[in-house]
Length: 101
Image (cartoon, rainbow, N blue to C red; front, side, top):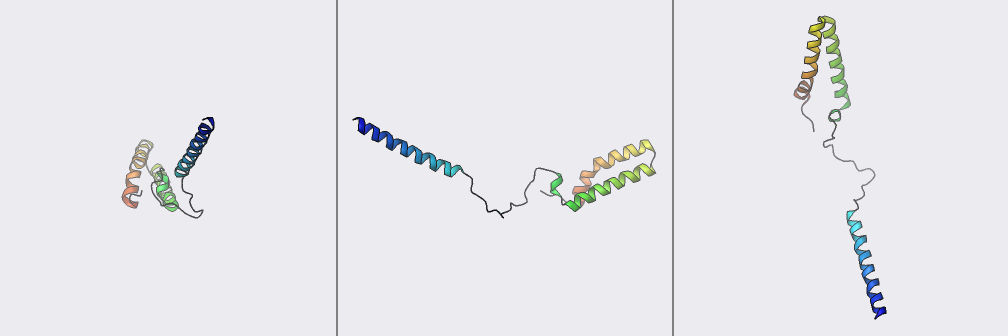
């Protein structure tokens, strides 16, 4: 009787080990090829939705606009126009360059 119980316990443990190994194998993510690249979906960062040249262009034109405003307008008007430029900039960028995901 004791030998039979020991054999049944060993079989149960072996079956549980196999099941555990199979479960772990299923849960492990598939290994990607080293050269495989993912698609260009949402990045989670607003700045990375544009190319480097687009981001540089946006920054340079914005800085240029602020410099021109501050050189040509009196201080209270320059503050108002700078705030308006910074508030309208996202809408302007989306309208001119298009929305990118």
